[in-house]
Image (spheres, rainbow, N blue to C red):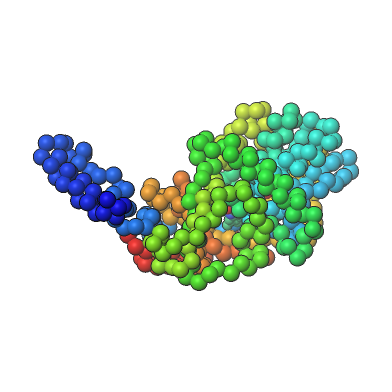
Length: 382
Ligand SMILES: Cc1cc2nc3c(=O)[nH]c(=O)nc-3n(C[C@H](O)[C@H](O)[C@H](O)COP(=O)(O)OP(=O)(O)OC[C@H]3O[C@@H](n4cnc5c(N)ncnc54)[C@H](O)[C@@H]3O)c2cc1C
């Protein structure tokens, strides 16, 4: 019997068996596993997102701290303080936090000092502080705000180490090797977090386009790639996906459940004896007044006025949050919109406005992205 004949015969036979079982077995035992239905349809079934404006419970605008030459990672002497910089990660701060934290750690350890001040309590500051603790340093974080009131809390939460990380026409050629070193370190680090309350986990990611997508440098896509870190992105045939689109890809990617992640890392920091002091740094003299001789600057956009960094500029990004939906656990991006399913909600986004300091959410932006995704879901099979 060939394979097709087998299924043609086997599936009705299974139903028949179920019909017999109905009369003598409790109702729950007669249910068939889902896979029988998938075989019949031929394509991989993907649950539909329930979208409507009344399911939006939160809208936020975060400011990515962008520097055309890439994050600032040098060391400078300010009076009797050594300042180790680690800020300006653009749209890749979550992904690169451990990697650039490791670069900052090497610079700190080279001073021989063990009492270290870290400025800033976003994902970059916390990762850097943890790495310093692991190397035997006593760390105090000085910060204006703590999570949830930090930019890091307003991010999507996907592994995107080269998203708006620099302007390739401005960054020095040696930046790519620094980026690669940081990316590889971060990637390894995230593998140790898998299974810990899903603070970091793997998820399927679909790219769905009617026309072949065009790569635009600096528009939020990955400006550099390292082969072999993530599983390959595969192109799906029409029979393999339920979307009304000709260009569909799937790959498995890392994602971060932001609120639990930040809480987990901050708890680890205090568990290892770290201290957090709420203090705004307004001018270099405020740094001079700290008791520590070595200070790591992880203030993100907040570094701009204190260090007069002309290069540092915001790239604003709006996210609209839908009520979580248990069966939707994938990510999707299409022309003009994307979403990611986190434990705390389904975050819809897409935009990036260079130089925009306004953090007021726009209803039109939410309606636009919700509209794009609603159409995509309506046209989806299943
Ligand atoms: C919409 C959006 C989506 C994003 N998506 C992703 C993504 O999917 N993946 C990814 O890798 N990255 C993403 N990013 C980028 C990422 O969020 C940032 O690169 C990252 O949050 C920067 O972290 P940080 O710790 O440097 O800055 P912040 O989170 O801004 O932390 C800075 C800290 O410094 C403190 N501070 C600031 N000024 C002062 C001061 N004067 N005195 C004392 N303390 C001060 C703040 O209170 C805060 O604690 C996204 C960003 C946005 C806006």
